[in-house]
Image (cartoon, rainbow, N blue to C red; front, side, top):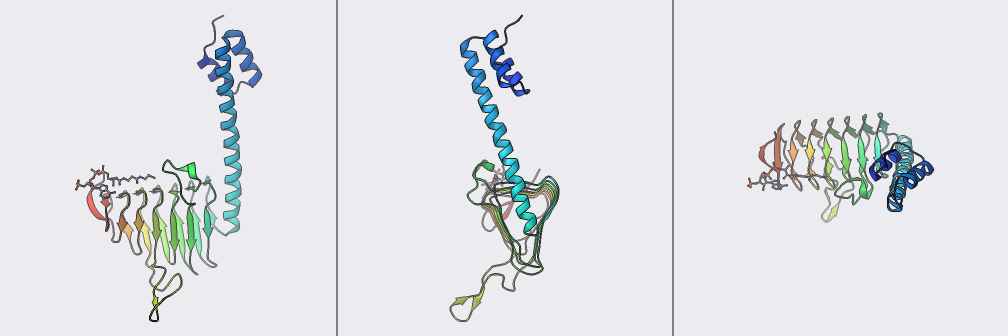
Length: 239
Ligand SMILES: CC(C)(COP(=O)(O)OP(=O)(O)OC[C@H]1O[C@@H](n2cnc3c(N)ncnc32)[C@H](O)[C@@H]1OP(=O)(O)O)[C@@H](O)C(=O)NCCC(=O)NCCS
């Protein structure tokens, strides 16, 4: 009978071979060094499985918390890490099917320096995330309406808000959150927003547009265009 190589043993392990039979195969058909490699692979595989179970359980826990906080949730929502969800009484936060919120440090290649923050500030405010929207370490804060269209990806640390939070009161003081100047932010379908961009109140971003990393978007962005800089200007058209 032919000797089993490390790769074959590993494949056997991946396909669900139990520990003892893999080790036995490795011992019978291979040298001690291969046996060690097989056990190491097995160890990694087991750790990965334990981690997947851990993430699945935490996902269920954070989804339950989201439901208890009154969010409207679609199917197959993935919450990597615990997002910070604050829904004002009488307001709405909706996550459609397949939305993914990355809040844990390792859930985005750039690292998440803060959890995703979804917050409505007052009665009647709305945050609506369309199907398959992906957020990583973002702040989305609505006093009126923020709508992110299907398939849009928002890069690590980007912020989206529809109001200025504070307005001058009296001679030297500033008023509390959600003054009377909110304007809705509408982000189209299949948009890509670069890391640490800021989308300000009243902006509409057209379908399939791209916003460069670090851009500060103060004006509407046409569909299929690329904008960058502060204030964001069109640099070219998206392919
Ligand atoms: C916007 C972006 C997609 C454009 O990529 P591109 O089409 O390859 O564009 P180019 O690199 O050819 O740049 C075109 C012009 O825009 C400028 N530009 C590109 N990105 C910019 C940015 N973020 N800020 C300011 N200017 C930018 C370039 O300097 C260049 O200017 P020039 O024509 O005067 O030389 C890319 O630069 C970017 O910002 N990607 C973001 C990636 C990201 O954040 N991912 C999130 C991971 S979580």
